[in-house]
Length: 102
Image (cartoon, rainbow, N blue to C red):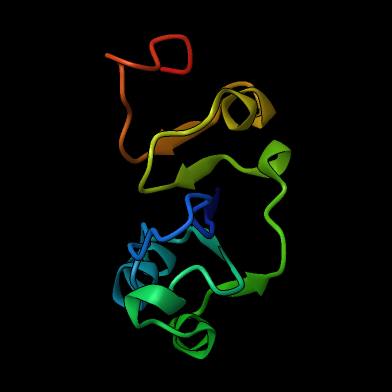
């Protein structure tokens, strides 16, 4: 199963949805983890730390190929529509202001 951790699209967002330690655990469970280049930089986790944990680093995450998307901020409508049918998202949602996306 492919799990993706991408750079948060909101300017100034410093959090990341997975740390190198959590990536190591996911890989230990047999999951394929890909991290977008720079996703953890503002949180203090440079790409090499994710690589040492076993993740692949990609410049771009193709949402249409992701089975699980880990994110911090609520997804935009465009992001939600870009996911393949049956994909799972793990992150915050905002049903009060983005019910259609949820």
